[in-house]
Length: 178
Image (cartoon, rainbow, N blue to C red; front, side, top):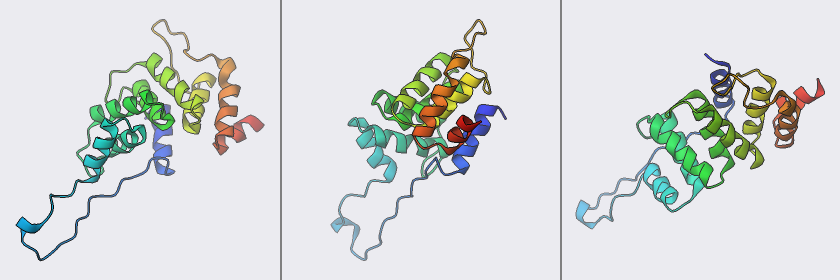
């Protein structure tokens, strides 16, 4: 497993990634003809909100597709929804979109786009995006352009760790003490 993959796994295990509840409907004894139209499931409701520009709903739906929670696992759809959330200035969406672009999950691997999305997520206050950028800058995760040059200068590591710490990432705060 790559260092980035391990980091994302640890985030999921720590509860950074939320799970969405399944659709629950109640039973009635009335005939089907007298019942209202079927209730929409969470994915339908989130999809409608996302289509109307609600970036937070796009993130929730993307997580459902990423994890296969209540819907079939679909990395491509997940990636598209995270990117859409990032375009709507939702920092969490930028974190996930950036990570997926770095790893090539659901999209073609695009390190430059991944770094850009992570930077937007960090500027939007997402601690995980800032921490990931700091680890990239430190060289703990190798992210380079086609010529092999690092996309994030090592000199920016401390800045990203500070931003991550300020946003609540205790590991980043510990790194600053070292």
